[in-house]
Length: 164
Image (cartoon, rainbow, N blue to C red):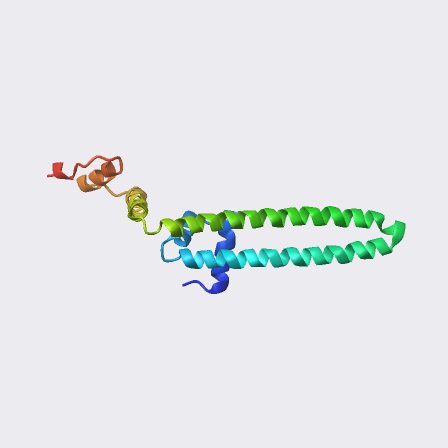
């Protein structure tokens, strides 16, 4: 089980698209969706708080450079450029957090759908079979007729009845 801090980091990394497939799948499991959703809301609150701090710091800097008169004009210009760039990045990140919230809400709404569960199981089993095949090749082991039938099942062919 992840700590709250580690989970918050995982949620933020998912928004940044730096998580691997297993981590993304973990967040989207039926058991984790509400926790994921709560993590996204906390992240949204954190981003809003960061924006408030940045705005307040910018207002102080603007006042300070304005008080300097002509000597502060260049500094004010640089401060405004940095502020605008930083704010845009943070707002963009906030937008991506909101997109993840929409995705999460959609998954929660569809969680009662049996089709959704069937597709999750199918994806899990496909990955298990593909990993099995890769491990056999990695270990230089010979495939059995059952292995071959399993791989053919990935392509939609049922040949288990033909095995002797």
